[in-house]
Length: 207
Image (cartoon, rainbow, N blue to C red; front, side, top):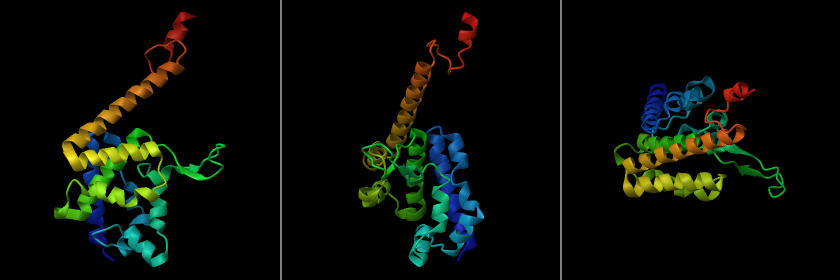
């Protein structure tokens, strides 16, 4: 049990994620990242099971067979792929649980989070290959949408092989392309094909 240690760890981690998010233009997500960790449901258990070199959720699981802090956390933070697990009601899915495709902004925040977590827990031993190594240890059992897994793995591979600057440049590219796709979809929904975000004031003017 370590109140001061846990507070310092989660705050340091949050600031690292914030810096990462700011580098790719996700300012709001950076500011709001992991605020639920300060809620009583998560913070009290974080203090009780504090480890320093790894998540207290792991220690809580080993002690109780489950982590109530994690169950609370993953249901409130969209940058975790576990948030996007639901039943597949299609004929092919036959009602089985499956990973849904994550929106790109949350996928990039997830990458920022993983990079920051590796830095927080590895400290001076951190290298740019650590986030990819951690991902590879668990990827075979992740219930993650194939496209989400593909993009995350590519981001972390670029980080490991080409360095941080290239990885963040790629993330900015993904976000820019995603915004372009969303704008195009918005225009397609607008029957007048105007360039506005479907407010369609030109419809009224044409009447």
